[in-house]
Amino acid sequence: MAKRIQFARTGGPEVLEYVDVTPVDPGPGEVRVRNRAVGLNFIDIYFRTGLYPAPSLPSGLGTEGAGEIDAVGEGVKGFAPGDRVAYAQGALGAYAELHVLPAEKVVALPEAISFETAAAAMLKGLTVQYLLRQTYRVKEGETILFHAAAGGVGSIACQWAKALGVKLIGTVGSPEKAELAKRNGAWATIDYTRENVVERVRELTGGEMVPVVYDSVGKDTWEISLDCLQKRGLMVSFGNASGPVEGVNIGILNQKGALFVTRPSLNGYADTRERFEAMAEELFEVIASGKVAIDVANRYPLSDAAQAQEALAARKTTGSTVLLP
Image (cartoon, rainbow, N blue to C red; front, top):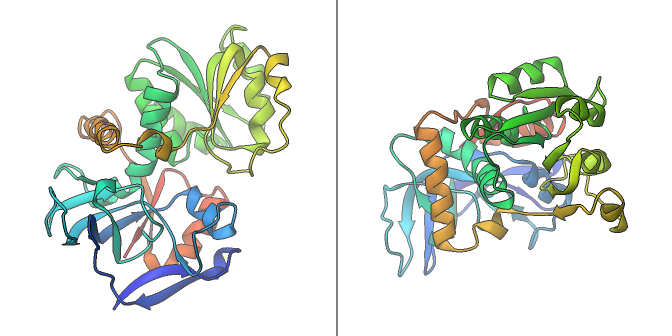
């Protein structure tokens, strides 16, 4: 038997169950990973609450982890039992000791990167890769706005932006988070609990505003983000921490300066094996080089997944959180 977290109905953290399951053998083209660390992400909460529907119930949870190949299915090439691997996509079920997923969703993990670092970095780090390097390819000397700059994605974005010579303005919710974002390389911070974000962006940019806003907060920051953009600027909405953006009148994009908006996802960018490997390779390179350090600030036993999600949802955490099977 093996342990996993599952939920049979949607709702609050109390719906998560820590149960025994019979290990499933990998099918053709699949691998079974013995997780050594599992990443915790907001998207996991979206599935638990029903904002994103699970394919069926009861359902496993989580899509990110790192460990060793435990078994390989028929036709799998390039992986063997004992190989160190990491993943950030595939079927729900990463909150488990053993996880079966398609081999094409797994990448080899360099020895230089620990399981905890990989589990904390894959989804968030690949997210930053596509945001800064693909959705809007930031250029040296540019000033950008990034919401939630002290969180898991934000902490990586601050470092990566600085390494690229980009001035990142980060929004935060406390002086402590402002200090953390600055330590990670943010050029400036705005405490949205005390300061007017749009006015501060105008001051910091000398009235120019920014060409791109990266927004994972959602409903609460939608209009604020639009108001921080230059004419024909790009609003990148990639999360719903405060709830989804709904009921949008698309005409507002014209009224505020012929703006662009996009709603990207990792699945939309790592949509081929080649792109996935190239993105992971660039992520592993910036981590191994020391330009980006992954802050694994919170560790919970797998059995305490509900408590870990509560802390994340309450925005009590900084950096990344991992679950340890």
